[in-house]
Image 1 (cartoon, rainbow, N blue to C red):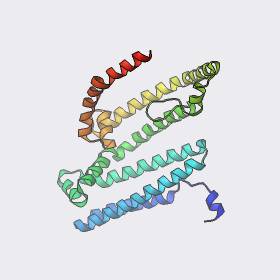
Image 2: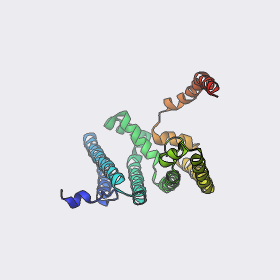
Image 3: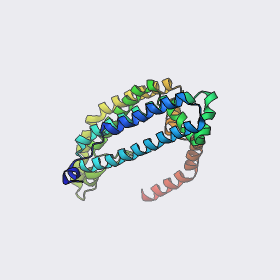
Image 4: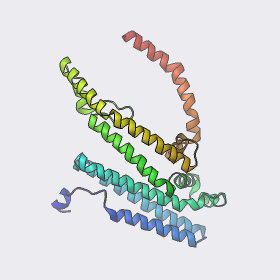
Length: 261
């Protein structure tokens, strides 16, 4: 590798690998369509799985390199493009596995790859149907806009939007006047974004309701549980977990707060 190659930023938008995966997907569809031999079908799906894993590894490696080397303003559109390509590939996989949704053919995929493989294929076939891709892209665009807003304000993008980086240090500054000025400056910036944030929330709510309806689910919560692969057993356990928190941890937390009040 030359010095020029080392200095050149990795491009996560390189279309060659995207086109290669699309090629393998189309070839897999053709092979499965014209063969009824179970061993040949398993070999075809295994080959596709290997290519997808290789592609996923390459994308993660290039993404890490891009994050380390690129300016945030340059990186953002690259990330958006990568997400768009990912949605496109999931749409193609949905089309590939949709033929196995029929109860008569479910057993074939079960025989070929086992229960976990069959469950993942069914998840992709249901949650990334081709007619959902436009809504999925709109959903992702809104989420990315809000995450960018959090980043601009100095707020974390995981869990609660807690102060991060410079904002966090400014709000913890030993000088009370400095902390006050930092807080008022932050609050002013937050107020400027409030209207747009509310509009994004309303748009996101509308899109997600439509997404769930078109995917065949009663609510977006049900669709999201299926999309993320959370099991019904785990979902049913959540109310019990919340009840235990209220019974055992909240009284303890209240007692601790009262001692430090």
